[in-house]
Amino acid sequence: MRILIKNAQIVNEGQVYKSDVLIENKYIKKINKSINEITDRTINAEGLHLLPGIIDDQVHFREPGLTHKADIYSESKAAVAGGITSFMEMPNTKPQTLTQELLKKKFEIGDQKSLANFTFFMGVSNNNLDEVLKTDPKNVGAIKIFMGSSTGDMLVDDKKVLDEIFQKSKCLIAVHCEDEATIQENLKSAIEKFGDKIPMSMHPKIRSVDACYKSSSFAVQLAKKHNTRLHVFHLSTAKELELFDNSIELKDKKITAEVCIHHLYFNSKDYSKKGTLIKWNPAVKEKTDQDALLEALLNNKIDVIATDHAPHTINEKNKNYINAPSGGPLVQHALGAMLKFVKMGKISIENVVQKMSHNPSICFKIHKRGFIKENYFADLVLVDINKKYQVVEKDILSKCQWSPFLGDTLYGKINFTIINGNVVYENGIFNESQKGMRLVFEN
Image 1 (spheres, rainbow, N blue to C red):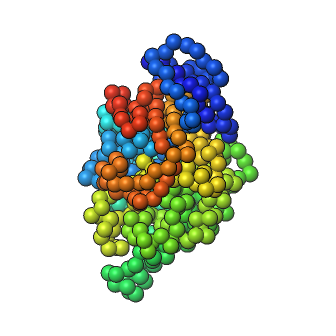
Image 2: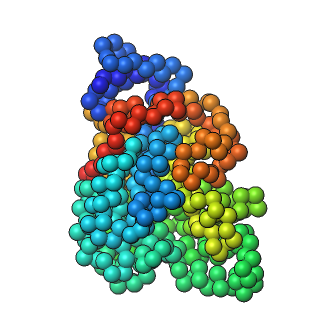
């Protein structure tokens, strides 16, 4: 199918300019100020901004084994409605993705169900080094290490194992960094003080700045020791920012960092209103941390914005502090939250595109995605950036049916999401005839 997009305000590689775009056979065929060719369809994009599709480098879509919370179909649908055209999914499913065979099965599910493009990360435990080292860096986005609390046996705390993985891995290593011993010590003190009535305000003290820094600094130390390609997920503290460099171009960085929407949008004062709905690991921390993370995003110490979309049912989230799981649904409203920041003057739309589309592509060396370029895959989003909307329950597409943004006003009505040259989402209507493709990496 040939599609012609006319009169779009293109946001790409630091520029905003008006142009037409011709799409043909999955790819962007031509970008020009005036294209007049016979096509199957013409989309008039007057008044709309055309963005490269968002690449979310960290999601938990819960399939297999935890599908009462979410599944690949439901969450990819929510992602597409939010302008996310590619996602990278984490290994802490049930069973955990700790063997090549289990990883293969997840890719088969993605082929069958995902409306967006996808990759799945290989998981690491203290006992599966042989399986981890079989991972093909051209076909798998990264290996994921939980250097902090996780489910089952995915906490990797054996320093000998960690040293060997950092020494031998051919893949990018992505890490969740919180020091488990520090967390447990803090939790014990909180239980002694509050019993089973620990207030949510204690969460950033239990999963503390020191817990984050101790773990992330160790990961950076290992990466420097072995010259390993390292990506540190969801930074949450000002202190950790000293570990990262903004003096070199992203393509030359060996150590990169990510911040999540919720650590930019919320701070500790929001616990009194939102409670366990904003319980994440790492914790949402102080306003000084929130402000420092935004500044680091702007000065390029932080390279990528992601969601860490991790749904649970509302009944699970409504339990008390100790029993309520961490995580929440974010893919549908991530772009809306960042466009709200654009409207507030906190960040430019060019920088949002850089951090949510271009940089994930560069960091993970994704083949021909993340940019609006000729001969690249046509993963595109047409959005009215000035259109505001309120997040209401009836519009939520994640299976869990709630959002930490419920009642908030965000910006950016998404009119079209195009994936591999197919209009998958158009003004609230989905075309599910074509599924997403597996991401390929230039390693």
